[in-house]
Amino acid sequence: MKFTEQLAAAWQKNNSLLCVGLDPDPAKFPAHLKEQPDAIFRFCAEIADATADLACAFKPQIAYFAARRAEDQLEALIAHIHDRHPGVPVILDAKRGDIGSTAEQYAIEAFERYQADAVTVNPYMGRDSVEPWLAYKDKGVILLCRTSNPGGSDLQFQKVGAGDTALYELVAQMVARDWNPEGKYTGQLGLVVGATFPGEIARVRQIVGDLPLLVPGIGAQGGDIEATVTAGKTATGSGLMINSSRAILYAGKGEDYAAAARQVALQTRDAINRWR
Image 1: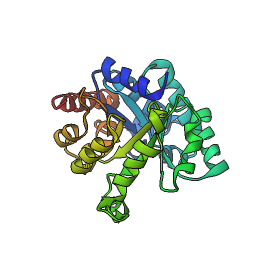
Image 2: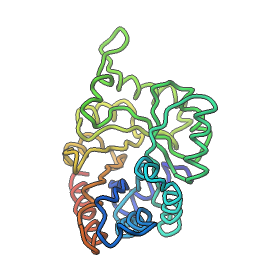
Image 3: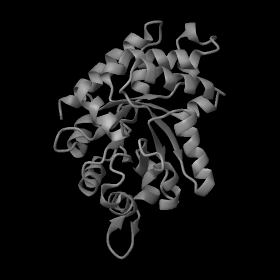
Image 4: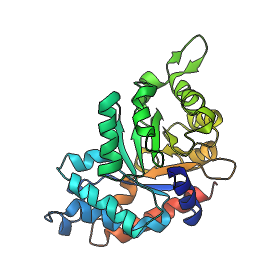
């Protein structure tokens, strides 16, 4: 099953556009986990178990694992999600961006070592930096387009060419028109567009049709749920993976942290659904 088929099934089965981000910071863990050698795995696995029926995807951020030499726990976490919650895709948030054989190695890392269902990729080195990822026909490749950070405007909103096209619009156009000939990669391609820019979400949706959008920036980053859903949903009320990380992960500080995370995830999913 291709990534977008898996995602569409999760949208429907769990009635959810919520993507749960897994950004484990041991300094914020409950006290009973802090001295455990597998604390990162245990924390994330319990969050996943508590929220899997409320989510359309999980998104572990690789830096939070690699910085603590916990890549083996990331492998174990993705295997755990696949085993316990089949059908909920895992997006490895790596934002890799390189060319040739180096990009091939990054793709092996994401798709063969970690067994991720999709990965975030930086497309700003051009089409040949993306092609090694597309060789994995059943995997998703989600390209940075209009990111949620304020500094994204430094480059992504710059005008390019002879007209009035912003760089992020050009990326969306190239992905939908040139990098996806005759819909060849429709089962693989998606774009990252931040919830902090609902006007740009609407513009990207206009350009790319029904390609899925990964939307970070609600919750701790302040993105507005109503504006995000209204701007980005497809005609069928789907098309979005709206990510929330810290607001869900650290909703509780005690041993009941997973139950607290579930409560916030439920509230977030239902808030999203109100505007679908």
